[in-house]
Length: 258
Image (tube, rainbow, N blue to C red; front, side, top):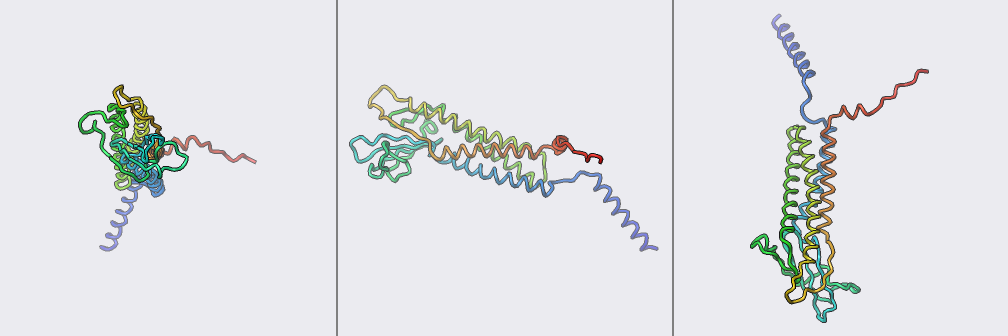
């Protein structure tokens, strides 16, 4: 009798536990949803690597002087958000048929310095042309803000995967979308700074040499990072939406009676 009562009590507890489990919503992510989140996180990780590579390197734009200067060497410069590098290249190393000095990746004597407006607050002169520090500082600040939002978005998605806090998925989506948008805005502000530098020749001697310029691979990384992060934010936003609105859009076809 005692064992039968014990077994009946155990069975009642199991049934009560099953009823409570049916009445409560399921916590955490389903395996299918977790796989989708991880796939989008992998996509945004590619964008994050490109963003860090773009912001941390100084090959956003190259300025090249022309080779016809009666010397065996010529000068080129490449710069990014933080510093500028002036290089003296041997004209014999420049590809045949190229009118300007470069590309800047060629071996040569380089002098790289951080922009003066980050240290002393002064404008930096490149080939007798002056930068416009307000525009350069704005481009760097917007890029750093984009990286900060990208890191916050990564943290939110990691919390979703580790703790099952699906409410943070929408926050991460907004962070990634804004991060990609800010990187693209930083790129456009940088383009304005390049035009301001080309027009920054002063009236005092010596006369600035004629320059040709071309955008380089760091700026390409910034474009790719901005687009990928913006796309990743949109994908996370779709994953954070409830499923019932999408189901209501699908018209269910009833079988016609024969």
